[in-house]
Length: 169
Image (cartoon, rainbow, N blue to C red):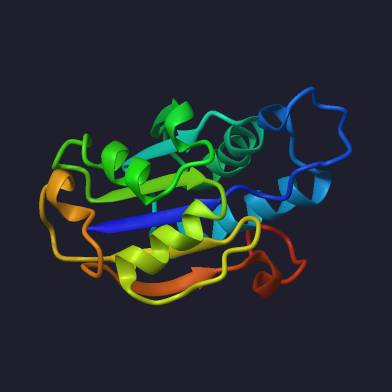
């Protein structure tokens, strides 16, 4: 089974949004989300389900990525992943049906970095639009989210993809 923990793309601190929860993406954030989506699709990491923080910057990140995968993907948005740590991630993922083999969770730091560290047992830095790619043997999701049980395969970082056309990056 595969888990993609994706930190939302770059958000606009100067947008005039009434709250932190409502901050939208910047132009750069929109471009980077699209590029990361294309890269994940080219890697064969098409999620069976997406669980997304309901913050504007997280839902906009998914909206920019979604077309990259070439098919409709069921998305659940939840306030529980806004400002969430490993406990909330474990709870949300633990409710997923066992037939899902690839899940993407979109959220925020510092919770996402800590979750990768807890799940894979290695520290990782996740800047905006970074996707940590985790793998483990197939087990039901309710049993899957255990510390140290996952292997960190790689981290997709938009800065490493270059400024090329999204389809080639």
